[in-house]
Structure formats: C-alpha cells, structure tokens
Length: 120
Image 1: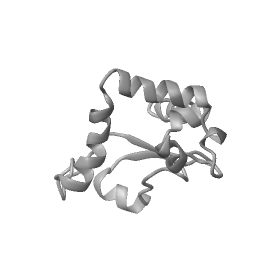
Image 2 (image 1 turned 90 degrees about the horizontal axis):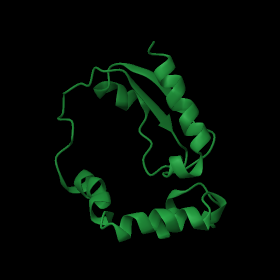
Image 3 (image 1 turned 60 degrees about the vertical axis):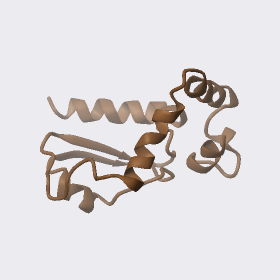
C-alpha cells in the first residue's frame, strides 16, 4: 500500500489513482504467488549491480517512451538518446505515476498503439 501511496499520482490518498480492489488484487497476485521477491529485483539491481546496458553501448532498435509525471524515474530525453539511438516516440503524459497500466490504462494503451502504428 505504501508504494501505491508514494508512486501513484494522488493527493495523499492512493485510491484517487487506483481503486482499493485493484490495489488488493495487484498486491495479492504478487504475495500469493510468491512473485514479490522477483518484483523487487530490478530496483535492487539498479542500485547495487552493473548497468543492464554497458557504458558506451547503444540500442539501435526503434524505441518509444511514455513519461508519466509521478513515476519513480523520469530520465531526460537527451540522456536516453545517448544509449537509445532510434527514439521514435517520446510522450509526456498529463498525469499518472509508476503503475501506468493500473492508473491510466487508456492513456498507456493509446500511446503503445500510436508507437507501433508509426513503425508501419
């Protein structure tokens, strides 16, 4: 619940962003299946491990990014462009936090559809 309070786009009440039922379903999925530990891994690895993309390496496949204003991380496009050399879409969303698929599924889905439509 603490992560929903801290990482969603809300004014102090996470239920402004995600319903209580959706939060409980999401939390239950992770805890009851034992997947909670592996969900923490990317955050731990980012703080304690090697970068997933080595310094100086470049990713050349087309890339899209949806920037949500209340997400945990929001890298500047100029920094991302050093590694991702074919940024086709960079969308600054009007609202939302870390749990985009729960908070704003329509916004996220529309942006993903627009990205792939632009590849054709």
